Image 1: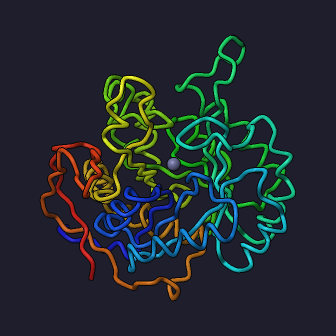
Image 2: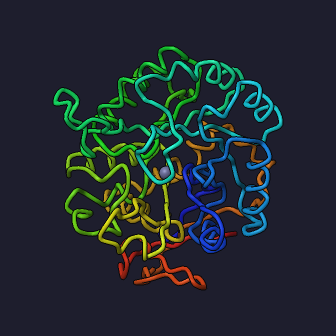
Length: 361
Ligand SMILES: [Zn+2]
């Protein structure tokens, strides 16, 4: 197999930033082999109104005319059920991103994961309109002196899972994505919720998986800020569970890169290293490498294309470009540093050599 048709590829979790960084990274979505990009709202200030989301989409579309952008709101007290209803009806947003306060870049306006009930009127509207709730599933370590909780970057995701089950239980028809699953426990939770899903049915609760979590463990980011992200990469057994889930051919696991660029200066500081791995220009190259290694290239199309598109209800006739993505066996070398004008970013696996690259036909 030296060429694989992937169709309308999609990355259901991208950070495209603002200003110079936005100008630099937005065109790399297509270079990386992605047709549909689901855009995160954690800008400064976060996207919480119609005007901001429409303006942002317009900016992105100018930078990448062949990419289809799906937009999101940032779940916060600034949203109202009426606003969400209007945004859903006009098609301005496809979902809402929920950040527990303080867990990652620009998340200080997020929600308290111990109590989602104040947002239930919004969830009600989302459920009615088929909007997706995208959850950053980590419980923040607010009180390290509380021994019972003792939350760290290693267990923040498992500690969050009861909240996922509660939301699903309270809103059984609300579409949920547990974003960037990083532990076996998270994978097991998604399997558990979908235990009774019948062949051919579209799931209600899914887990998205990044490219970099298929490669990394704790040892790779301890001491290496290029590999440091939230949620952090965990143990070898967790990585094994993620690879098995991604390559399983199950429709409730699909791709969301969480590509999160930071200028090299923010990665090379001795205080508060920014969390985020930049994968956008090579996302399919990385993912294909892993699928190839475990002999599951036949399941790649589901993971990076059909499963996510079917969950999000993508209407192919509405894509801004109908080019299809093909993966071809050709060598790729990741640069040591990517330079875009005055922006310098280190892409994942700098200097690394890979075997697959995307082409458009
Ligand atoms: Zn993210």
